[in-house]
Length: 402
Image (cartoon, rainbow, N blue to C red; front, side, top):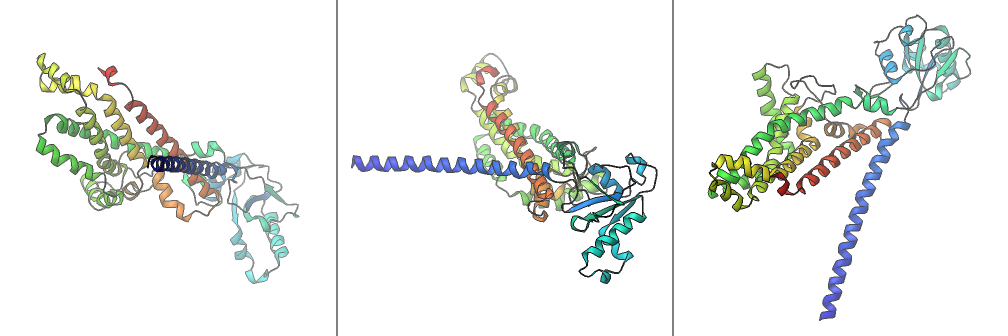
């Protein structure tokens, strides 16, 4: 019997070890895959894959930045001297414009004729810049100069102020608006949730009766189990129109609406953890404070709150983590405008919302696809820092807080 029990225990130990090893390996492989795909963005060309830019051979321009290319084809830069060339009006030319000059039936399967016609168009226009498929480039034409295409740089990604992932010929992957939108919404969400959550935690821990606590505590914890899409639907149908009418805004889907929804979603985490930390204060400390003549309120803010400060800080950090990582609710109520916010009443876009909205339409292996994985890397790094901070704060000795 003892031998059989030892076999069972040994088998359970092996299974638990194997389970832990497989889980750890799976997490490690997921992280490696995430960073491998994300960092591949910096090997991707700054123009659409499979295309090149051509200018007339007399044009002194040797290279253009992704931002300059985008502004040229958006008609925001209209003269070559604005990008370091000779004075002359820029003529953007796209491949499909060729068929407005020559009938498409003329070419059929004759690719050599197609290349010849493209070369003629460029040769006739010294100020042209042509965006052409790589397979149709008129390489043999002496009047054509092919501009080198640089790879997307970390500066373009982390310092860029525009997120236009589907723009042609040069997509813009500036992550700064998304980071600012995420920080903006999360910061104000915690600013709203912290005083409310701390107040409710103090009430439940120190002031509420046993009956009230037994009723409110499960109700608050139940809020954490409501799907985020339900919060988002409530925000979209009720909160956003209310904000629009009350504040006379053009739209109600703003950073403020996102902050309010995230504050509601973070409240159960903050209240539960902070209340547990306060109730962990030894009864003798409360009694000693009251015995020395302190009022109940003085005991709360001079004894209980300082003793539970580590737990309260952990609650705040975990609340921030919930706010930063939230996807569906924010996607529905913030307006999804990838711009750097200057007001709480502007539409913004967050990193999780961008990943959720665009991943389904991004071609696998392309620059857009890789940029979304790199956004996941940023979100992973932020979440890891927040979790490590919460772990560090929660392990601090309460005795040092007095």
